[in-house]
Length: 391
Image (cartoon, rainbow, N blue to C red):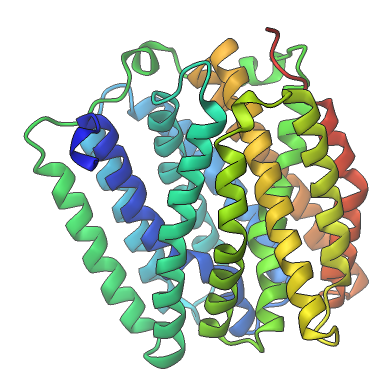
C-alpha cells in the first residue's frame, strides 16, 4: 500500500512519523518533567509564555529562509533543534535554564508544525479535508503513543540520559535520510513565491469568518490541553512517567474505533451542525476536567477521561476541518501562518498574564488547574464565532 503512495506523500509521512515518535519520547513529557523537577504551575505558565515568544520569533525567520533554502535543510534544522532542546536539559541547574529551554522549545514547535502543515496542506482538495485530517491525526496519535510508551519507561527505569541518546540517534538518522534522497523534496512553488508576512499585514488582516479572534482564542487552549491537562493526568498517575504513558495509551485505544468511523464521514455531514456539536462537547470536556479527582470511583473516573479525550479529539477534527477548508477558500498558506502568529502571540500574552496572576495569588499548585478548566469552559462558546466557508 505504501509503495502506491506518491513519493512526496511517503516522504511527508516519514518526516511526520519520525518527529511524532521523537515528540512521544520526551517533548510530550516536558510539562510533567518540569513539575517533577519542582517547578510550580506559575513557572510552567511562564515557560509556556516564553515558548510562544520563541515560536513567533522563529516563524518570522522560517517565513524568510524557506524562500531560498532547500527543504532538506529545513527538515535537518528541525531535527537539530530537537536535539538541542534535549541537550539543554543537562543545564537544568544553571541560571536562565527555563527561559532558554522555553525559547528553543518554541523554535522546535515552529520548525516541526509549520513545515508539517505546509506539506500536509498540499495533500488536500475541496472534498476531503475532514477525512485527510482524521487520517493524519490518527497517524500522529498512534506514533506519538508508541514514543510515549518507550519514553515513559525509559524516564522511570533508565533515566533521562537514555532518552537523550536514543532521541539523538533517531534525529541524526532522520536528517541523514533526507539529505541522501535521490530526488530532494521541494516546498510548494506557491509557498515559495508568496512574500513573507509583514507586521502591517498581521495588524490589518480581517475577514468575515471570525478567523482572527478565534485564532487568538485557540492559542491558550492548545497549551491548556497539552500542558496543564497533562499535569492533571500525571497527578492521577501518582507522578509516574510510565503510568502516565500507559494511561494516555489506554485512553487513546479506547476511543480510536469510534473516532475512526466519524472521521470517514465528517466530510459528508452537515458542517455547521457538526461544528456546533463539537464546540458544545469541547465546553463539556473542560467542565469534566474540573471534576476529575483521584477520589472518584475507578469506573467513573475512566469513563470521564474517555469522554474528555473523545470530545477534545472530535472538536479538534471539526475545528481543523473548518480551518483547512477556509485556507483553501481564502489565503492558502498565508492563512496557516496567520493562525500561528495570532495563536502564539495569544499564548505569550495569555500565559504571561497567568504567570503574574499565579504569583500574585500564591495559588500555583494543583488547585489552580481546576480553576483554569472552569475558566476555559466559560470562554469555549466563543468558538462559535468561527464561521464556515461560503459554498
